[in-house]
Length: 148
Image (tube, rainbow, N blue to C red; front, side, top):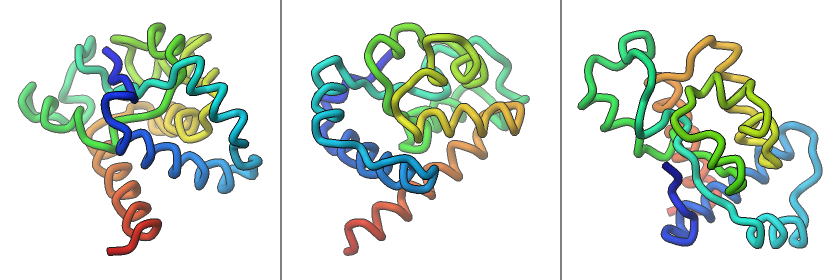
């Protein structure tokens, strides 16, 4: 299930700003305003890296039970920007399937989303530790970008 960006512009803003950092870190050019407008017009959604409706065992990903999983999936570190067409193809897939299947995360125009896929394949599984680490990364980014 996708989380439509229009329902939470704050999350969109954080993830788009973080995308710029990911692009610069990967040696890519910053996103041009025209490119962002084109992506918005085509539909930007927020995907749950670990899906709301899971199709895999929890213990191998660091979760003790379903309640613990549900506490983590809505955290900022489990959210990524994707094009609407990609989000439709990504539903219920594992992070590793999203990273390797055609027309899913590996084909996204968002560098940060592709980086999550590379990390999940490198570590063999995206799980609780990854959500926590990415959440902290995004919190640190926000504090640096918008100091209190």
